[in-house]
Length: 541
Image (tube, rainbow, N blue to C red):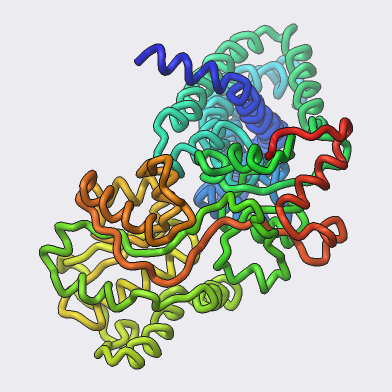
């Protein structure tokens, strides 16, 4: 066991150092900025007491915003990357520093100040020689708290392409890889302890006034150098910027295998939340991005998928993955699910996704509109749950539906939940946005879920390893294999395909002149090789 862990660390050593540096970079710059703003603001508020309440209230309001939501608010203003992450971390670190500075300075005994004035000290001397030294332990307690908070919140920076140790955590969650999760979580915990210990040491050093000036200058210099540091690229002066999801970067049939298959060489990559990829590509924050063939934003943002001419990506047939125990307990559910075979082709699914993503119609309403038409054509008696009185939420659900955290899954989850509630006597409840494949699949195996929508290619890559001779582009053969493997190993049923394949696609902007002659992934590989400094041919076949 220990040998395997050491081997895993050795294989990922370079990536670990890179992500740790990114984590420290983000955390330190944000903490230094919050300290340089929070401490002076606290001094002003401690002197002008009526400012204390509005200052702390404003910082409190920011602190109550969930970190992911704050990143979402900043994206339209700042775009993706390091700047957005640092601003969010700065705002989160501000409250404990500001509040502790005010508390520490206001807590200095009034009699000590009066005595200092009595011996002729002015306000500046009282602040620097009396108030600040006495309040220093409280102020540093706020900085230490902010540092520990920032170590944890910095992991979320991976969602906006800023890197850090959160990259490993989200990759591991997406692919059910505990070793990868620990590769990010353990160093982050160690960094939190080290930050607290080092700042505690710094507090003791700063109590010696002679060291105060030098330490402060060094801290400001270090923060300034980090803040002004220009990111260095290892792939040429003007490389193409690629955006990928954490799952694509980690999967066995993802980034590394795809690069090798097409001989793509070195690439500048950013890992982003699936919901941000299209926005980043549309705004020009990345030049190409992995997407999904049924996404409605492809047409809306005038994007173009490059043809997978060497057939690297297998079909990702969508179907319901269900606990066999649930089907045995409710036979009518199996009958209902079988009616959905072929009900959603790629054109229909793309239209539903577009309504939810771009027309801002709720997935519940999108699903209800689809079911109203489909059940009428199928001759199925169905009542729109959205038009009825809400059910008693305290009543236990007969069927628990889950989804992953992207639009198509939300729509599919609503379709099956509303169909069960409106066409049968069963009661279904929905748990949307549970994360990646690992979270949903493990919840299904444990019995926390009864059903969720899944994709054949995803199962083959992350759950059930296919035999070497399985023809991955033969949909019938893949379906038969999944039926047998999931039933025998996990007592799960892989239902009939819904009618569409949501396979990976590399997307570019149609109006980007760099891709005017690039129609296939092989064309992209040739273009990148021609643009590389050496022009050498690497990998591929």
